[in-house]
Image (cartoon, rainbow, N blue to C red; front, side, top):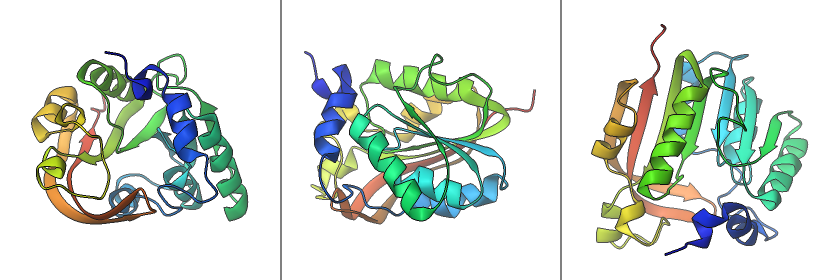
Length: 212
């Protein structure tokens, strides 16, 4: 069965982001903010995949990282550019899905993914593209909802079906070619605009590519 969110994610998210406020707020994801500065140095390169309205990408640019935001929604890319201008920072913005054609392999020191949920085949392809985008020694920083988000009837966001949720086992398989430094399930308090607010069941991952 076709699903517009995955068949045409740009159009789907255009409708979600076409609003005067920022659906997921203007502040970065808390896990990214607390983790990324300990993993890479200012001046190194960061790719924010599915950057939405730019909250992670703009924050990364503010930290002195050379940042690229990749987002399939045209409305999203416009809001990324507006937020960057408001904050007085520069970053590259790519209006596309995450593919090897959109992003050159071995070109980033870190790849950030927050709440990028997709069906199994699409998810695996996305994660493999993210691995290929890493330079030797580069890191993936990821946060996503687990099936417990549905089991516990959390009102804080996420996909409507368990098949789109992530488990630690899925991520361990998807990133088996990397060294997993962090892989935890946690209950956290989200405060990410009206789209993500309240207690949430999440999985958090940090995985590093080998130096070779």
